[in-house]
Image (cartoon, rainbow, N blue to C red; front, side):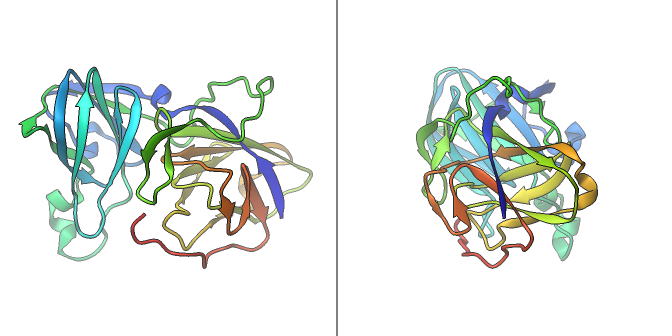
Length: 271
């Protein structure tokens, strides 16, 4: 295999583009967003038990600190978390795809993407700003040619559903450079030090990766998306990055280019 080190290249929250304000959180569909991530921001001061309905997965920041992950799993879409908000509550919501079978296709409440019924201490929060981001080709905020390579992004005290430390400041962007003399179909392998996110190659969205859940650790990378010379791989890691972890498919702060996929790894239904 062929490995390439990644570099920290910025926070996803710095990539947000303002959409609109409304009293209540609006679904992706109303906002005209049908993929990726929407940010919901409430500003104020409140304390208590945060409750909400989530479709499909939410990454929660309180006053800029990454405090938790809420997922639509095990046939449940409600979530609770104790919070102490001094300035702002930011909830980044991921659209993980639409239901394509059963009666749920005709049920709007089962299909909408976003959040609703957000309350703290039993009091509904009113007055929301809506944001979106380009997951296909995010801007790289660091001068990568002159920056020092980082083996990891700083980690915070909160933990992901699988017990990994969440990234400090929320989801992070990483990048790697791949220099080729010729191109061919290949596979991009993620190790266990990654958690969940999106990956793009030369501005083309390759797909999602989710090693925490398994069993697939590889994504097919078609040769037509590569080019002779410099290729850029951009990773949006949504939860955790722990390069010091001992990984099934390798280790360290690297992405691996391989000629065979790794698709039968361990499975974690709680991820």
